[in-house]
Image (cartoon, rainbow, N blue to C red; front, top):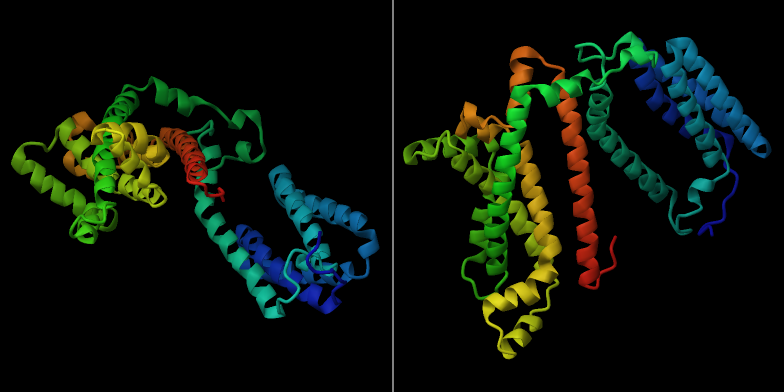
Length: 391
């Protein structure tokens, strides 16, 4: 049900807003063709015309949207073949919907009726800014993933890939990863170091969070600041400090030294997530357990731990990701025997430009997505246990 009754907008308003959107889209298309300014002008002009005309063709919305879709698809195909045709059709699908969304006033249907024009403008401007930031952050990842299936040893899209020909795609880089002794050795090191560092991070971080959550602990803020400092201090400084310290005590170039270094980087994540979970913890439960004769250890494992477990696991997953993806500290603290997967990727970029890096990066992205999805599920479960509606 619409909060605000929708009404038809003026041609001038629809054309001006459509022109702004067309200029933004034209910037990308024109830049790809070698002239960003020309793309802005053409995009703004075409969308202004479409927006102006659409206000008089609202009754024929479906027909006009279909025509725009086909026209943009044909234009894209003429410019760059099948891939550009698909992208053009997507542009036509969006802008065909967009101009009528403006012309009919549907953009206000879910907004409060008392909002002013300036507030409505900021409402959508804010969402556009967030969308642009999201696209800016996610685009490099989306580019790497299809490149990992490149049949050639290139870091760019080949003509065969752009034409969607089967000859342009291959799993050779994935085969190289799973059959190369260097990559498999690095993978084994990562799978050895990361779990051990995670266990240490979870153990120390959970105990620290529980201790610092007690109101009677002196200097809690100062201690918390020190414990989470690895998240704040530039990583290169932490790595250099660890190198000089470990060199003095004989831990430099050892597995144990790398594990301790990664555990120090993971502890802040555990402390933060467990502390957030403890915010809604009912301390009367621990007092009730003590009144029933349970010792502190039994109270922790039987009462406290089940309730804060989602936060503990979330912190552990973040600590695992941090250790598994970390490269700067291991370059300082480790040796050739502790070469991890990110270290091997860094070496491949610096020395031999191996396209296998793209396959490894894709695998790491998939693993990270799975772990972050798990974290989100645990967060929602934690909120349900604390009586909070998941958002």
